[in-house]
Image 1 (cartoon, rainbow, N blue to C red):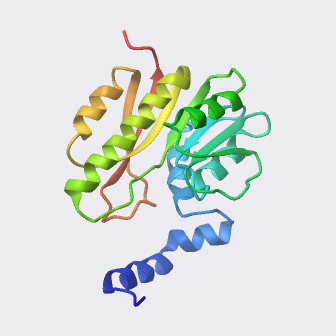
Image 2: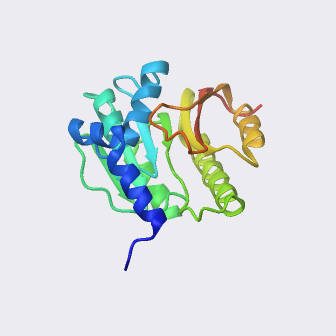
Length: 208
């Protein structure tokens, strides 16, 4: 099938991307690794010995970074509907984490421990139409928050990708009902034209 002008432009941008080249040179699964590394440098959110859950983990860039930072005594659990090739220090569970059987598998893998950090770099399959993509993105973020509330330890962190647009302010307000702090992060590795930002919520507590 012939490539469209848009797909050719994306391919050129992708292969000219400095972060793509850096990720290949450093042996990371994806350029997204540098987004998490930048947030880590600023906020020191991941520490040795932590239990981390990575939602929407494929191809494994964030799990790869997290596993290196929590080792040797920490644990990284990753989940995605797509298959992820094995990574040292990462236990991967394939499937939709909102389905009972997958959720139960994740909880079983946690072995009774609560999570110190839940990561979500999930995004919908993009249509290019904001009226469709934005509600789907916020829905994924809401599902990730619901999961995080069920597994996080007191004082724990939640890092989630969202898009600027409808529903964002309400979502931030919702985060503040369960977390002491909510910070906005836009890593340099995020493409400038992208509307994505990351919300880093810290100091988890049960809703009063």
